[in-house]
Length: 125
Image (cartoon, rainbow, N blue to C red; front, side, top):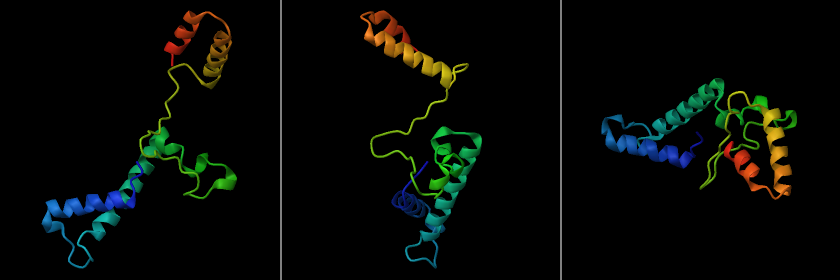
């Protein structure tokens, strides 16, 4: 959801190489306009995902940030090399309160020697 400028440039260059009729005669390298177009397309795509409530994009919207940190590019949570930004939805009827209770149960069970209860609670996650 957050490609770099270099990645967008590579895609625009590949697009023009595959379809030479799309080359722009006025630009430096023939694909600069396509790069800007793709950049704006990705921004519009992210805003549509945000309006649908996709958690990977919603966590970066200005509405969910602290009032002091309302700068658009501040504290962006995007996946780095080798990791995935994964913010799962809460399963069905479970909410934050229910998951907090299960977390406390799991901590209490870890203090005991009974490992079957731990396995049962871990299967839910």
